[in-house]
Amino acid sequence: MPEYILFVDDEKLVKRLVSHYFRNQISQEKYEFIFAYNGIEALEKLQEYPLANLVITDINMPEMDGLTLIGKIREFRPYIKTIVISAYEDLKLIRQAMNLGACDFINKPIDFQDLETSIQRTLDELHQLKPAPLSSMLHVPTANIHNSSSGINEYLQESQIVMREVINNLSSHRQKFAEISLNYVQNSPEINSEALLLEVSQMLESIKNSTERLEQISNAVIGY
Image (cartoon, rainbow, N blue to C red; front, side, top):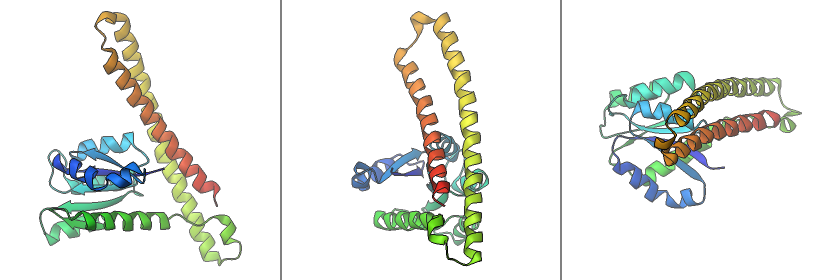
């Protein structure tokens, strides 16, 4: 399964540059990049892609800036890691970003080798946070067992967050399906079938992503 990475930048050229530089990792399904152009759209993307564990965001963006976005992410998905990019070498901004939980800061124009190193280091740190299986803890100090218990609690808290998202998504999708059905009955000749199929596909993809995230959490807990 690839690592899902959300890249947030209002410069649309960045999407093309990122996709080109990481084309091998993308084709090998090591990384899958999701793109948003402001903080509000980024939060919507995180609802659609609950498997995303890393967010790379610019600071200066319209509608919602990167610092506000990091704060929002910290509130509802504290396990997500963030990397900040900015054209301004402002120590105050860097300090604010780090205080909000950002784990790295990269200047623009982006040095993609530095970015690649930062992504790999951050993902490695993220994976190291996952506690070891129970089989490797049979003869370990009590403190380690306590740490593992804390890890399980974190997974359970995360699963509750994802479950709430699944329930909210299902409720939203049920309402949308009802609206689609009503529109189809009332305006059958005017229905755009391609748009209808796309919307249904997006609904199903959102549910699928949430289900995969729950399965991932479940497997991690079972591994203790």
